[in-house]
Image 1: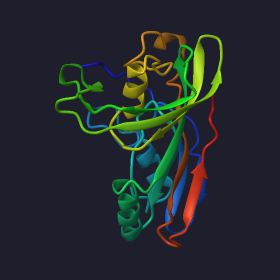
Image 2 (image 1 turned 90 degrees about the vertical axis):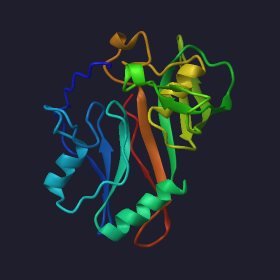
Image 3 (image 1 turned 45 degrees about the vertical axis):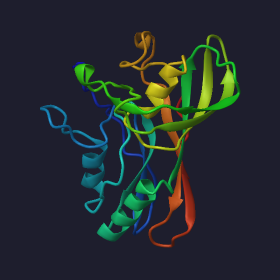
Length: 215
């Protein structure tokens, strides 16, 4: 079991969009999506949002160390509708990441099943025997001194999927305290959920929400 020192950031709630059906927020890195089960982990994006909007309902999650777009519902009907957008893979997400090393190719697809590394929880790992299907498309945005900026398009939603897949590609995400050996050089995980596109539960129109990458 990997120890988890929870120090949530003291930053204001950042609402990207709100209407009578949804609230879209920009989650800061280092804040849990939902309250943890252990002592000292009650602070979360969900609890902060509900303090400002009593009717906010959880739809999906982001890793604690990942920043970016999260959508909440404001009615049970909207929550169910949005849940199906994710479950049926109609929702489309893109992430920005800085990864170690210079990635040679310009784009590609990683198709490797992922399962829990039970001896080193919360780690996940590629598991070709018991793992669940996981697919990530990626493209290079820019190359720098010993690192590469990439945009990631997860086609599935496995826990730690992008972090494990980039590690398997040989280019771990910088600042990753679980999967990268040089995490101490960075003040956060260099992974940000930049866009989320799906059908709006009220209008049924295709909408896209964006949170500017902070790194």
